[in-house]
Image 1 (tube, rainbow, N blue to C red):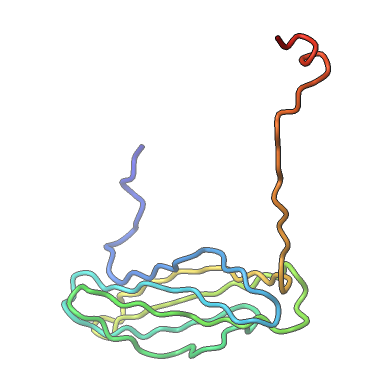
Image 2: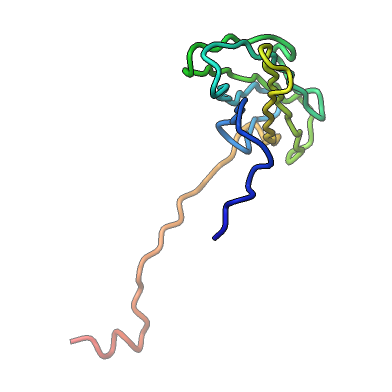
Length: 140
């Protein structure tokens, strides 16, 4: 495999969502953690802009996060799925981080939020090997 062209430029600001799909019960709040870093800069402050397609964000959407000497930072994005939302509805969340040290250095990530019923019932599936009548006839 050739990984030579997997990026078009150097990696500077990195934004990584913990989960690509977050399932939240209708009428409830959920969250997704994001990891932030700016490689090559000892300390920086990132400006975060968070948007979503259906307006389910319940926390701040434009703020700054300080980074310390290649340690990075984390942040939890809060999402509330409104009551009455049809089950299976999906909202796309976009996270953009811009370096205050170098505004050309930016990172982006996206994840989806799915509206689920308030509860799901999972019944365990029990399987056992039941002998067939033919197999039982030949058993010693």
